[in-house]
Image (cartoon, rainbow, N blue to C red; front, side, top):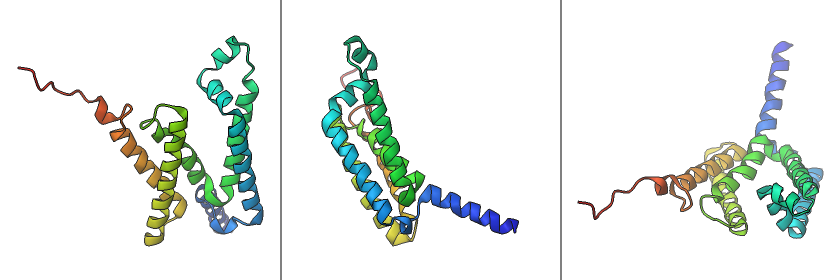
Length: 177
């Protein structure tokens, strides 16, 4: 009986990490669509407040603006999107596809709108590449998409024009001598 219990525990951990695409039923789709819609509406209405509150909360308070509720709303939206993604996509892909593209975008763009656009592009590219590789090799799609995002982050960290590693290497002056 202990062996069956261990197998069930391992299966539950596997589903938590990698998701179960078959678990994406009507309720899961409604939850994911609701989370996406709520997030897009909140971003459309409060994007400046979100940026100000996350970039410099002390300025918000010094200026007499109450941004604490914006921070709370943003954290609630992040939690809602995590919960919506866990069922079908698992923790690995959900967190990976939320964080890695955003981190990679900082190596390519300076302003918030540009970083958001780059993050969407990195996420889309990682998703497409990961799905193609997963289908061709029979691997888990969630893990493969997350690995593709990590590879794009590594490329961004190495070659990105904004603080990429290769940009920070000292260059010997060609006119010395």
